[in-house]
Image: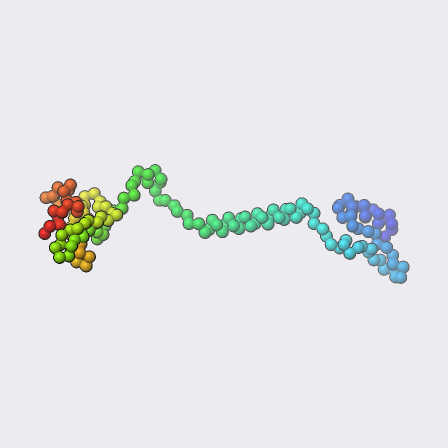
Amino acid sequence: MCSSECDRVSNLLVDQGESDFECPSINKSSTMFHHSRSSNSTRRTAHPHTLLFSLYMSLLCVVLFLTCTVQSATIVKRRAISAENTSQQTDTKYCHSITPCGWAVYTPVSRRVTYYMKNVCECPTGKECLKSDDDLSVSAYVYRCKDIPSNRNPSNSNYDNDSSTKD
């Protein structure tokens, strides 16, 4: 290469941002050209904005990965009915026909009721908590939700009244 061509290439590379180019020189011991570059010129240095961009991209990938992981781990609870309908409802639990609605615990020998225990559930409308069984293993009368008898007044037939426990 001529020195003028070398200068032109060097100026062109400086304009493009590669300023570490040097013109080859002729080795006097041989006719081969060799580059007179320093050992540092073979290493490419990254621009600061390239490092910042790669840092932002790495951070974005980590955030997206964590977001997807957390979203897939959460349990989504969807309601079949709207929230307007649920605000009017109460959280009353109703006893099934086989679930006791109460107990009247008695003394084993005399069968005299010492106290009453009510279950957390309530009888649905049209049913009442009435004595159904005598559980000898716990010495208690068992009360279950039953249809209201036509011959009884519903206000007097609660299991709290002692009249239904006397046999």
